[in-house]
Length: 162
Image 1 (cartoon, rainbow, N blue to C red):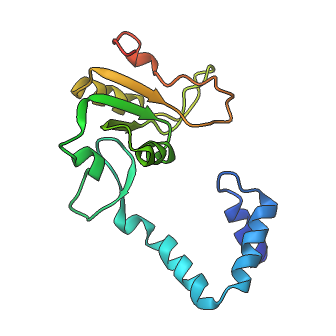
Image 2: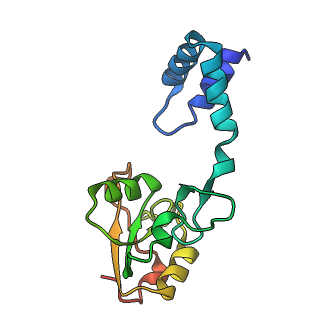
């Protein structure tokens, strides 16, 4: 397999990117100056160096190596009695851009479908809820499952989440 095809296939693994879009990206990169390609490669190669996963809400954040929690979780002015459960990091960012919510977050990492299959962090969520929660606010983004997802894992059902 040649380099163009190999890179196009690698790019096609990204969400929402198919083989044709992957090839478009490859040809775009080929038309860019070598230093731009090198800069992009460097950014990808060092992505994990400065970006970490928060130990509380499980979102990705930019932080020093000593920090284990993000700026939202370390903010003492946030309301500890509220927990908004979001599907992915992008949903959390959208809520923050609106500027109307001042509680805590939890990034679920996926949805629980009617079939019971789905990537989510049930154990971590239960731990977070047991730690400090009076009111839960599920908030999901648009998903391909047609709105049939359930953002309340079975382990939380007996608890008094609204």
